[in-house]
Image (cartoon, rainbow, N blue to C red):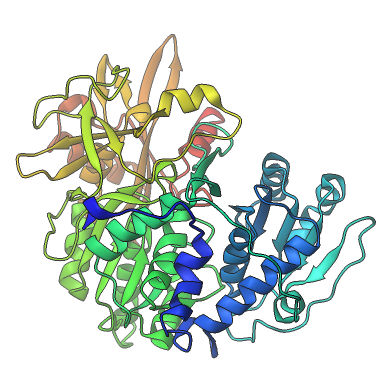
Length: 546
């Protein structure tokens, strides 16, 4: 199938994901669940078209950016598809991010309209006043227990038009000529994790998202119309934009949303309420659910029931084999671990139904081509490293971004025509399975020898006391670097020097001697960025202060 994936020159993702479902006769199917609220494909389609009309009426022109900063509300769907239907470019932000980060997004995107909730507007009001926006749309910041279509109080801002989103998407707008978009027009900016500075926007076209949906969601994962999806990562993160909105919409399935912070309790409420068949997960939450289950049973309460799940996605961070084994033994739900990136939109190497290699990230998704090259390779035509040897992954596919906005130098390093240099280290075995070795730019040189943090972390995670951990390098001065492991323990274990030495010995006994962490620091939790990944920048800043 993937060799035949072609798209007409006239392509808009609002048609591909929403309006086509109505044309297919699926308009009455439930597209979104939110608590007790239900929205059909026809309702999402009508609201998206109404918002497109409102955006155009209030001055948003094709190719201009619309910044969406929303919790996981139903409004997220029409905010996305209305933006793309009017030919504008979608950018998304985390509503719980610090105000300085939100202000950065507003300035960086040069957005002409903002779709958000009152608390976000209040946090960046000064920046909004200075931005010269055509309009600000406000949605009700509803908990999942409330109707999301309630009225919202509109503030009065000088020289800024503030609109109630719910009113705009239910208003009767006069028919407008369709905005024609091409498959290679920019549709969405996806932000990187910002591991080496402020987040950059990878600029993606309409074709990119449709291509990955065809080859990954439909062909590789075989999503069904009967599926109900729930996600731990929030919708502003491209991983979840795909798995909990785009992918279910592409097959006429149902996306179940909840707006609360994804704690084990909030997630379990969503699972009990919506009985999803597909869960978008991350390893951190898998570990927390296992710990939550043990604690419930210790208190004599019922064990967790995940029997409704058909499978789980896992991505965003490494899935330790020991954690996968615990999950599989306890819940019996398959986890399809894979890797993708903002630069390629979504997953391009993955385990999949009927093809799982525990501990690996699976095989290349059909439609993509992968090569493992030396770290100093200057282009995709360089010789591949020998089988079984670690190299940097280069990936080729029709979802590759055009480049980074305002960063030609980094674009030249990363994008090479149809190819993307991912910066991720892998080895490939004789069967074609890929084994993750960490980020090339995160390797540590300890005592003159290279150490991969992920290898040491996975080793330490096999110790029964360790819940999660992260290894960084600490500057000792004079060009010397020491490895420091930050460790979060399971409940019931004492943070003392005896355990610290035991953890070092655990690594010494299993890996080469130079790889053991020279320092161990116990913490209650590890800092994470707005995509849920361990924030190594924050750990390094903490280390420099101590």
